[in-house]
Amino acid sequence: ENDLAVSTAAEGIASFSQAGLEMLQSGDAIIPHGVSGTPAAHGLYRDNVTKGWIRFNGTGTIAIRASFNVTSITDNGTGNYTVTWNRDVSADTENTSDVVSDIGEAYLGTTAAGSTQVLTATTVGVAADAAQVCVILNGAQA
Image 1 (cartoon, helix red, strand yellow):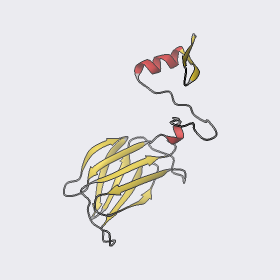
Image 2 (image 1 turned 180 degrees about the vertical axis):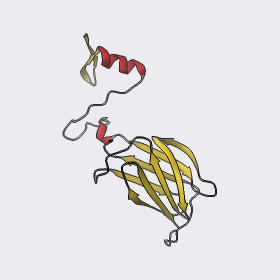
Image 3 (image 1 turned 45 degrees about the vertical axis):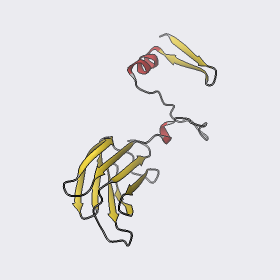
Image 4 (image 1 turned 90 degrees about the vertical axis):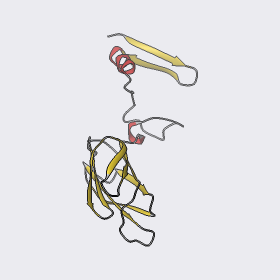
């Protein structure tokens, strides 16, 4: 197997196997795993890459506007939705999601390996459907 070296002034020298080079040529990113310490500025490590996201319309007939790693969304009632992830994440406390909506308040409900519950409400805490809801999923994938 041939090892190839790639060098840039800012990055130093990186070594890739033939398989690694083929991954780069196919458009798949090579992201270091298990690197300890604080990532360098603009560093890209598996632990700090967003694992999924969705922007959806939560009023009337709910609809996904844009997404990554999302299988579906479910309308559970007023201001209550479930996002089902295509590729599960580990169901532990290291996984975090962030949610925002256009009506005032947005909360995370129950989070499991394959889904995240999202709750939206007015600024006074009354459950309400939101015209725009955005969810970002971070954490380790299963």
